[in-house]
Image 1 (cartoon, rainbow, N blue to C red):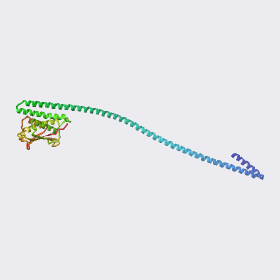
Image 2: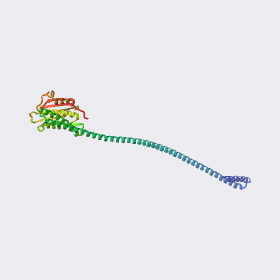
Image 3: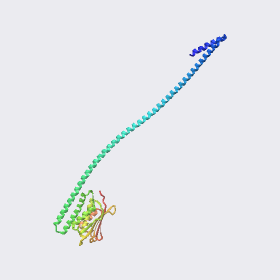
Image 4: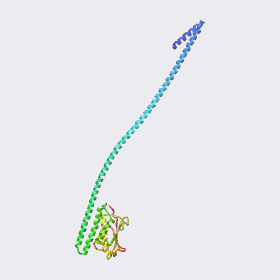
Length: 336
């Protein structure tokens, strides 16, 4: 189209020049046509330039849009990569922690199984030990019961033997021996009757010993015995020694303290004057005893008391206080 207009413009311009040389009226007409063609050509060029500018702007706009889209795509890609990296890192950490947790749980489960196995073994051993202890306790009680019965037999034999003897001195010796045997028998009786086979509660023991001694002398109706002491426990060996000493001192008091008297009072007590020692006191309100008499005695009872006092690592003293008061201070034994 532009070439066509350019051709019209040039041809009419030549015609206008030719007619102008000839002073022809047609020169003006052809000139106007040439001008019009030129104007059309210029307008077409302007349109082309405008179209070209519009195309360039559109191209630039498209290019910017493409660049923006590419930039956004890169941003999205970077964000996606970062997100995936974080996700993979978190997944790896969770996986590693889960593996470690599984390993820890496996180890813990193994430890728990070992502990449960050990606890089961301990429970089994405890049950076995408890059964064994119960069996041993039963056997020990049976032993104490049999010892007590055997001592009762010995005591009965001594009583029968004494009944066949007419000599009062011999009868006295037999009765003293019978009381000694009985004092030990009470110990074994208390052991198999009590809940603890290792210790003896001494106040209850003294009550039994005092009553049986009064019965053997036939003095239970006019001699009273008091026991001003708290409950106190001793092991079997110490209790036997203390019991034999008490029996001897109680026997001497019943034999000599209340001569020509219709009534009297005895006291038996075992106390703790301090944390390391025990104090046995046996007193009467009888006629009293000359000081030094017991220390120089040669009888079996006196020798037995001295022997047992040394065994207890103790010290024996006599006092006259409205009668006789015998004190035995000895070291406190350790209970099992």
